[in-house]
Image (cartoon, rainbow, N blue to C red):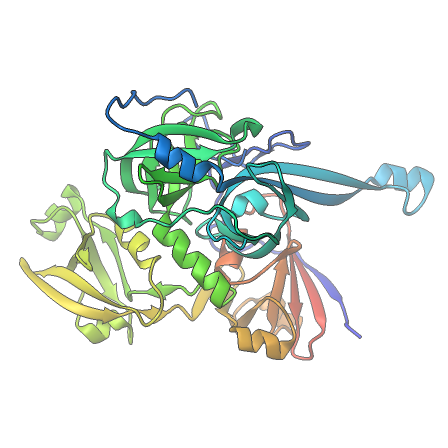
Length: 468
């Protein structure tokens, strides 16, 4: 029989707990969640535009629209919450204060396979108890969540259907600034809506969102409800998943952002094959160059990624990269910023070999680097080092999800007997599938929110710890 130990740890979480500048909007929802107030521009998740682009007299959008419309779906998620009313408990007795509330969110999704696989944003289906998908022909299906990655804000759903219209994934690395694109989704519950624009920028790192740092930026009109919808080129190829807008009003004012298709493709394949995202690292720390930093370092180049430290035993060290080197290309893809570098690495897996072009003492050199797996992630706010579990390990433990504690420095947890080898299975009732999930849950914690962490001890018994 499982033993449940609940302990409240009255201690401040160490490290920096930051708030993102996202505002989540749920169309026709009973609850609107505002994470932070900001008088400047806000980055707003579009799960819920007066078109700013000029008409393209010589460009035919009809073929791309026809290919896309039947492959973009409406996604409805329902989340149920049980809330206790202490006054009702006091006056009417135990159990009388329990109330069940539902929260409904709307977004979009993209069919990527004829047998019913659908990609959407993680924030569209996050915490959902029930997920419902409506096709363009009005057929409604219950959807199963295959997996999700909060870091990239990508989730994969599956419906029991066959011979569906689907979109072919394009190569987002080959997208050019100025190229015409279409955004297809369900803004404000207006199904099958198509808007046009151009690629305004690539590798965009949005302020206040540390998880995704390589967006495609467009001026195609996107509003709440477009999240998880398709960004396609004029050939009807999927080049991005519409995710966010920057706005002072909560509605489209000129810019929207999409997760590049190459990142989404890699995440989807990892979720299908491994159940979690296989994160690769190059093995360097550093900063992107600018004019001021280049002057201080006495470097002529003002674009690229400056290496301040090379991680021991990494692929970068073994290939000969050194401190003060400046990375300018990866597999002949130009690297002008940190977003360029991290976005490129996000499309790769451990053991992939990439060509790194770098400057050393003004001379251009090339080496091949084998990427390594990020086996362990340090969660400084909890005083824990965590590692992902393989499918085989999960099966052996007879669990579907969780991450293992590989090192522990948290004095309160040590005092209560938490040891290396414990498995964290959920935080605030949200299942944990990877160390990235833990980092994101902590990063998005509000100042007054507690963390309820459920673990399996070395005997397989459940324990619960509450951080205030």
